[in-house]
Image 1 (cartoon, rainbow, N blue to C red):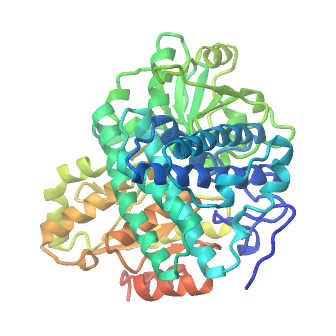
Image 2: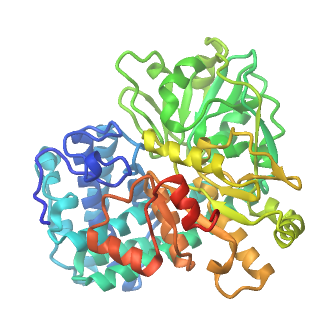
Image 3: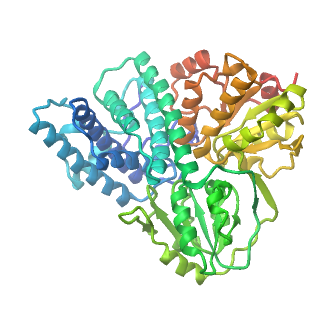
Length: 555
């Protein structure tokens, strides 16, 4: 089916794509068409920067950190729910145009020929941005299958960029990953690739996804220690508080240091929950607990929190017009929202939270919305410390199946499936999870098996590497040749592009028969979806009972 360019927008990168096909007037996420257009133009500029950077690198020229950081940040800022600020995106377009022009000038000086593609020769200014953006979006590729594969690659690269950016903030950067991103974007910009060649790039993206997740795991654990089994308070204290969301551990380190001794407590929200599992943060007595649930509930929970909220990454839900907390929102890194103060890093990468702390001191303490504790911290190191107990439980039959229920949560009613699936699991099944999908079941009373909790929470999507390490370790312990011979099945919820790279990483490791829901991605054309089904056994979700039988969990 050929798709025409739209005057408004076309975006189908997330699970909430309107009518299961794509958002054409305004994003279900809350993104305006003007923001979508600015992002399309930014990705156009990224394609230009990557094209000339890749060619220069191939000719022996070193690509500087400014280019690497720009591409990484630009891709991250276009992830669903990360940035809603048009001016913030357009400023990146301006920066990218300057970078591209400087790189093109360098190539000309060195006598290096460049392809005559629009991404390298267009010289428009701000007054031309809107018109140009309408011609360079997703629908620029007329062939539905090639478009599907190209977008699948780009969304995987966005996930890679997100993980790499967090590692880079901690001083861990991999030039090979930058080179792969630039080269891959150059190929889909300038080369006439077949569907087969693009499929190869999809799988290669998954391989690099494993590498970048390993790099981030190394960055986090060498900086803050290995996550430990931890009970996290979900109640509140009597002091005013600051709520920090997102995934960036460098940011929460800055915030905890600067709030120490101020009388202001710090709480995590949703994606930042795993910070409680790291030993380095446990010394802060004012690090009180986790407030609330998954990202999509933030409108009501931010209202009740009463204090300032700091977004370190996605996911932002645009506040309603009469929201009382918008003036308490702060953004940082790749995030942005109109009217909210953006906190930038200094030359050493540190952020100054003095304005946030001053605001918090004038706010009431958080309104309690629940009480008790939840348990997490089962990243690969912690699980491997329990390896003997786990192996014994499997060999004795006490544990019959592990179900990987990783990925994202979201607002669609159909996602209640994952709560019902967890409730229906027999008592000899253990859930392995990472990502905010866990909020569908991490507060259920599912008990344990011989002291092993039936929900082993490795952390957030940034900690998904642990799920691969655990599976590969079990493969070694049980001496099987194929990872699919293990008593592990995969029932994964997805929402945005970091979940896409997790999926591609699993495919690159040879994992098959993954169920993906609550709907299959709109960006998968029928032919591409067919290949994934036939080659990898990818399937959508059915009813809980149907899927229990398909996984061999029940007869």
